Length: 250
Image (cartoon, rainbow, N blue to C red; front, side, top):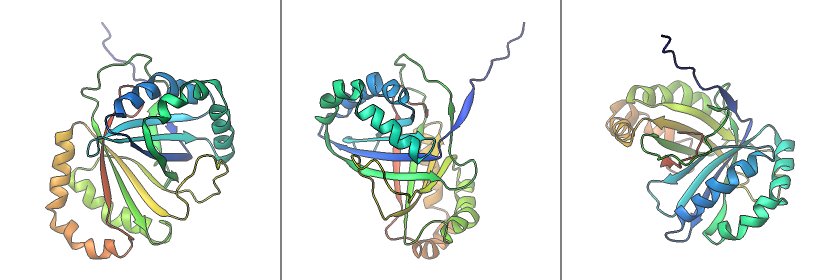
């Protein structure tokens, strides 16, 4: 008997990516996630975008974080126009908006190097399985004095990334600021900022914690902190994420 399991087909997403972080009213996150996972996934993707992943921030019970992708800037404008002028948003926007205090914390990004976007299943499940065993994610944001391409990207890949790898990093995407004009002005983005964003996936919270413990105790990593800080406008931000039941990133 042939017991070979056929692998689920995957593809890479996306040339243009939004990283969106919402501040919510207390105890409203699960309410928003229910609306989002039931109505906004297929609703948005039918308009021409890809919902890459949506998460609970494990360090902030009132934060919802998600990523969506587009083929290009023109496709972004067309897809957002179709969705926010369409029936799904019109029907469920009040239920979503009443959970939110602020939805304007948005970074517009693009892959920093070749094949540093997300490799994802082509399709998502239609049910709502238990999220147990889905792994955890760490989103690391470096806020920079200048565009990442002006030296920091090379420094990160040749000096910082090898140290992270030794500590057990499992990076799945590396993104940098997309500085083209935000042509869909109904949804603000954080303009004029330079960032490099690394996304890593761990099989469990314990594995993620072990990575961070090793990194914190790495003499080599401690030794590059002064040089690293010279590139930054603020300390590195690490956010721990748990995917929702229907997130493509799991």
